[in-house]
Image (cartoon, rainbow, N blue to C red; front, side, top):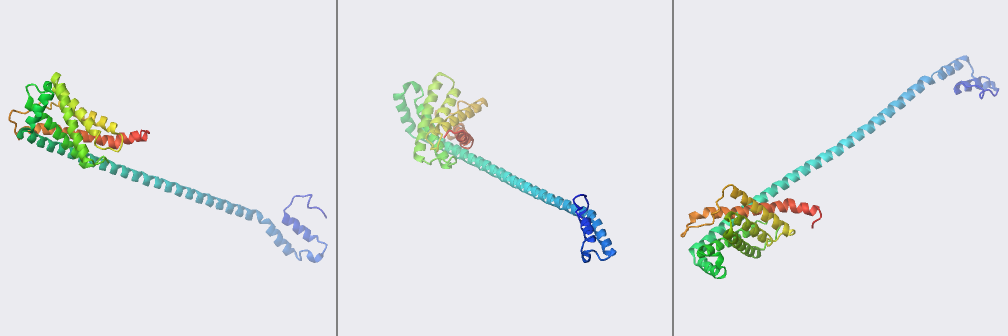
Length: 310
């Protein structure tokens, strides 16, 4: 009766066979109909198992599809966040560029306006008061080689440079576009000194060479010295070098465009109508200076800080 370990049949069929030959008659199937029903049921597992396997396959497919959808949703969500961050960064960059341009224009306008007002004020002091004559007498005593045959003109020119430097320094300080310390007295005083020294340099160079080259050198030195006193938060030498070189190159470009080197020469009895060229000269220097200060403030100095130069 131990037969099941010797053949390979369906376990349900083996159970039915064991029941049919059971020692206890009452435990056997009571009729052929019951046996037939059991055999019919045993014959169906292949189809039911196929259905079960198919259902498992569909479940796995649905699960994988759900995972795929979640992955796509997360990917598109991350992509959307990246796009939003990129758009926000673009708008912030455009805003910073826009505000930097406005600040640069504002600083250039105030510097040019200050230089123009200072030039007019200096012209009045130099040619309509006795101050220009007194300065000329002092210069003829201290520096006779620079004032030969033009004592009064030398004093007037120096006064004109000094007041233009005062106005330029005042305009840049009032603008406050470069996060500088607003030290009006110190900056204005240095504006007078730096421009007066640039006039002295111009006279020395012009005595032995071209007036245009002398003006370019005077612009570079004047702006360089003035930048050291403006009160920038850091990198003072960088501002001074870039500002001086840039302003000098800007004015040199004007000379190439035939800006007259006689802009600061006046007649014996000058009138206000002769002020247009001097105002244009000092205002352009102030605007060039402000522009290159802005380039240094928004581009060069941040780049140097990024590279580690604190």
